[in-house]
Length: 105
Image (cartoon, rainbow, N blue to C red; front, side):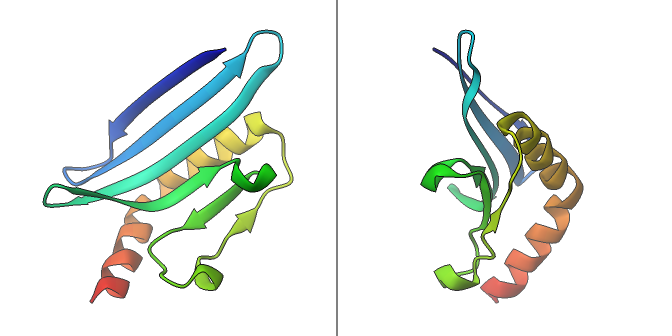
């Protein structure tokens, strides 16, 4: 089993964190992509893409009530899911941050 973890900044307060687990000959087995922002010393996850609950899905975590989190399920391969997650966060992180700030008011 091979595990890769990395993060890269989106701006001074935000970063994207990625954890990938692969198994020899089987390829990608687990994936977590988390978009964080920071407030002071606290890292706040805003959007997560992962394989928990046995299926690829996205959670918008800043919406407090679980039924309002806009959990979105994806019926794609794990490799495709990885690309979707990175593309979404790279293209929409500013919108997610603005929505989070509105909810926090």
